[in-house]
Length: 97
Image 1 (cartoon, one colour):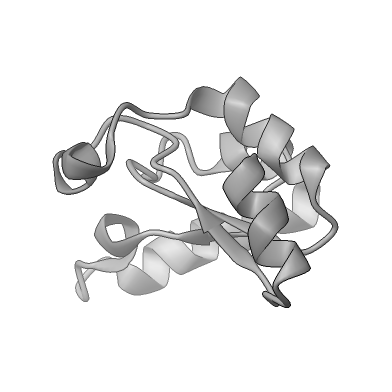
Image 2: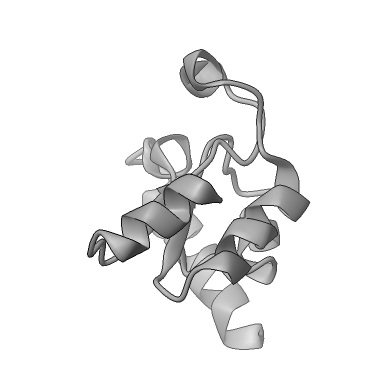
């Protein structure tokens, strides 16, 4: 939270925060935050917080329900053959909230 507050105080427009979940690509950055810690970061700042790390089609709603303003998810959007379907699922989910 210290880093998020410092970023906001330094003039950041938004924060990318994670990894929220376990993922191979983010292992060098430490253990996953988990949803509760992620939510604490979201509550600690007034600028948008984007969730990153292990976001997939099964769990993408959880960070949004815990305060994320959006998602930064490479794996979720990496397959161009399924991209339209994935975007539709996400947008449909957003309209139901």
